[in-house]
Length: 313
Ligand SMILES: Cc1cc2nc3c(=O)[nH]c(=O)nc-3n(C[C@H](O)[C@H](O)[C@H](O)COP(=O)(O)OP(=O)(O)OC[C@H]3O[C@@H](n4cnc5c(N)ncnc54)[C@H](O)[C@@H]3O)c2cc1C
Image (cartoon, rainbow, N blue to C red; front, side):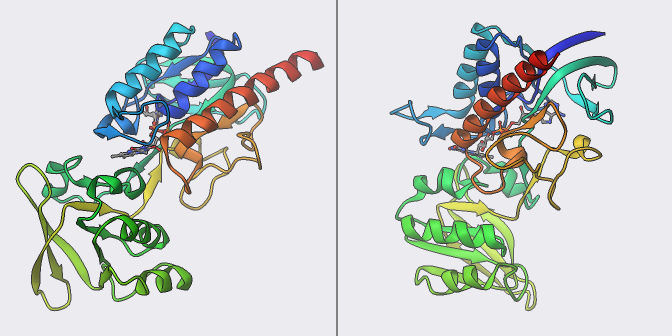
């Protein structure tokens, strides 16, 4: 069976940054790319908030550069999905299955499997994704400054993102499915007291309008059946994210949604030799730069862990 010193699961900003650091520490990292090589940024257009690109960069191009850098420094990047892990021994090496048919063993495992935004599932949302439809207000709100936008969701994140958008956009329509928010009282107050946020309760998205880019929205009151059209430039979905962590569930400590819990000020999980970084353990910031930052931490933590094991022998 092949033995790997540092196995990195996932090829987004967190995984590739971990790879860059692990390769430079001579840990011979192997990255398995998973079903979305390059991660979430490969489904977006301009990235304008990642430092070092003064004119912005397209998401897919940026992730190619991450990969090139990781490979140049000695990372072995492989196409394949980790389909199961066995951390039951609580001590490395751990056995991991790739594509359900190959087994490898790993001395350290870095989990950087990210999270997937939840979508409404209507055709116009898919058609206009990246052309005005987004699941990240902090990432894409800037492109709609001084324009009206809409946001769907009634939880804390939706309220937080609506408040963020209200500072840069002329008007924010907030679509809440029920007749009340799910958000905390404090967040509700903040939204309800922001003059340019109009909250539409009992409201569903009927259709996002626009040919090549979002130009408007048809909403439907789910109590009266009444529809209404509003002009918007951007449509934001804030109905939650699902971390890609199901295969780790039997062993790794997680919160109720599936976000991995790491030990304070580190990327250590509850299982020895297993580290987590990026969106898989971050429900608060969810940005490329924070994912990269924690990817760096995970590689440093893994390297220190390996050295401590070596010295204790
Ligand atoms: C539309 C959109 C636009 C965005 N725009 C910006 C922006 O402008 N600026 C910004 O900072 N952030 C932006 N973000 C957020 C940013 O993309 C994420 O915060 C960042 O990509 C998280 O990095 P990550 O490495 O943790 O995970 P991800 O990028 O989600 O990568 C996860 C990786 O894990 C792999 N994987 C999952 N399961 C397995 C498995 N079982 N085996 C092997 N591999 C697996 C996937 O294939 C993928 O490669 C945007 C997000 C979206 C969706």
